[in-house]
Length: 263
Image (cartoon, rainbow, N blue to C red; front, side, top):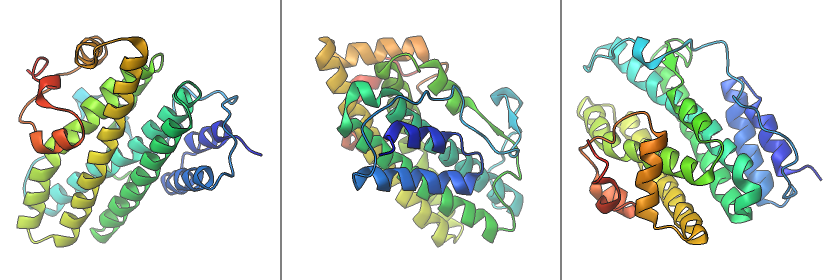
């Protein structure tokens, strides 16, 4: 029987975006159906395979995306979202494959489910771009999300603290305003996509907070204290308001966690 570690590695090394999305969903289905052994002998790559396009630029060199209702502005918005969700496939796969042996089958199930969700989100956004006469890869993007994952590859607590509990939680803050702007422009199909992503991301952050709490309990650490320490060590950025306190609370991330590190 093929191992789940081998299947995750193969998906991470798939460069084509459509094929990667399909591979991630297939790994999740095979794992849920019991067709993959709980084994992680296959080493994971330091960086996942990427397509030739989009061109990846340092965050500081990214062109500013103007808000507004122009066709170019709409394409830039949906392209940026598609890139986030594409990279999120690899973030979830790597989480399951890199820390699954340590954390157990339930952890693997949760983050493979996240990978499948992110693959579906990417597919919806790629289709949205096509309806606008564009495609994923048409504009440059940056790799800051994967940089955060690479920097925390040594410790599951650090990875959980930064990726679901900072980066994905930020999506809970900014998506509602984007959704309302899209809806106000008359784009109801786009609003439905964003609502689906927001609903799923609450669950994804909750997976992060739940497993982070379990790691803290096993290590005899106080969750809030350790989270703040890890964020200060490993997150190269600011935890900025405004915060969507209701969505964060639903995801198990109360204001008491992030108030002390918010800038």
